[in-house]
Length: 416
Image (cartoon, rainbow, N blue to C red; front, side, top):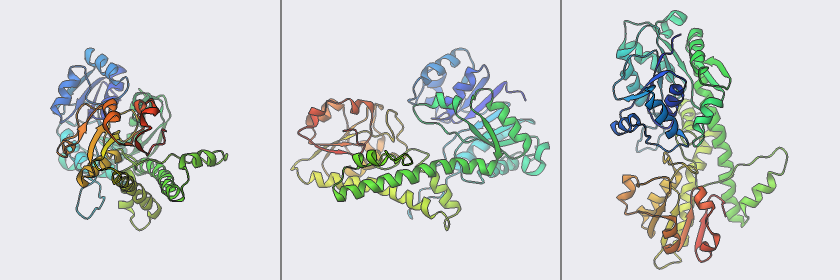
């Protein structure tokens, strides 16, 4: 199959690195993005997200003409969809997947689809979403045939290949990690494998679309359950006056025990979201997976209780919250428990709230409305009487610990 021109729909934390890597292999890549500011930055050889070395690759492939960003889809040989799959937010606190971004992507590419095209869904998705994508495309283009009706003989080939990269190491893992590829037919799978082999050094493993969808959900649910164990353990240890960090180190000396570190909750668009897709699909059966989610969702509230209790000791509490991202050394705030904690502290008017996040330049708008101050680490350590470590950024790990001697410190990451 000819991969001369590849279109990537969605130029976020996954789409932009994927587009850049493919473009670096000599192919022409058209990135489709609804954010005009992001399009302008990319076309200027700049990036709108934080990811090590991504700026270098983007600058290079834009300068050679191999990568170009647009707001309207153009014809291509391959279309890779990498758009968000969040929840539909409702008052009943349900967690129904929001597939509107994928449906919108389908409507975006449908007018320019041509016979022989390959469509790959990379977005993490509930089981059955690839089939829904095929249905939406078929409805929009009745003049073309699709694998749900024609199998190997279809005009359009469709497959699911979930991304499985770690923020901060995306460029490396896009190339080195194995890929699970689930086509809607044998031909769909084979063509998708041929594409990924142009830039993936890891193994490309073929399965069906539903199993590929479930594989990504399973990976993140496994991690969520293990994190929930650590978070629950940390609360138990607080009650029993045991140092949970020391306890975990001791327990992990057992040759078959590997307990993860607890934290203030679980964030990001994967681990904090994907398990709910399984629960939504099989609500009566996914009991352990649901409880792990509930345990991890509760942890920020427990941290807030600790901070509130500490604030009661001061006439004028000044609380410095170190970190807003969902993990260390990145700028990604999606589903961040740290962000949730800071906002709820402000809502409760616990005291003066200062936020330290070295990876962003501006606070999200909803935090600005809460009168939260984004400040430097030095200023926060100087004026705050309560220090809350929410993210283990490198800058915080390197802090002179003597500066904390006169402060009340709540360390949710164990960096002290």
